[in-house]
Amino acid sequence: MLTHENLMSSLAGIPTLLIPRAQDRHLSYMPLAHIFERIVLNNMFLYGGSIGFWRGDPLLLIEDLQACRPTMMAAAPRVLNKVYDKVSS
Image (cartoon, rainbow, N blue to C red; front, side):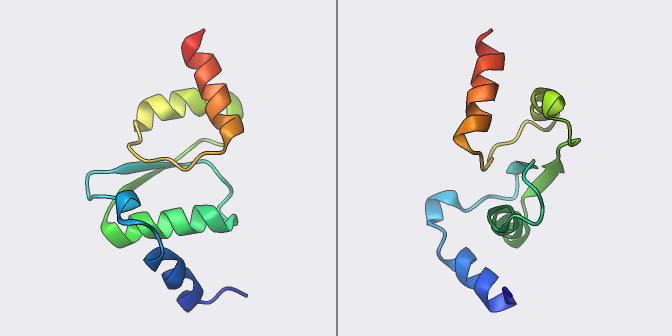
């Protein structure tokens, strides 16, 4: 079981380069049960950033990106490849 102390310790270990500002936006598309997504969300909460949630359909992810216009986004290479393929076609 992860404790509050575990999550706060993870946040303390994030490099200052990745600390969001109040005007930053994050598009959350990973499952909320995923620990990395929880750390990213808590980081946004801690520093006052905004969070948008995708609609749950992979085919609509590009539209969700266009609507949210995130300034920060945690992404797996596979997702970035799909975004690149859509943008470059």
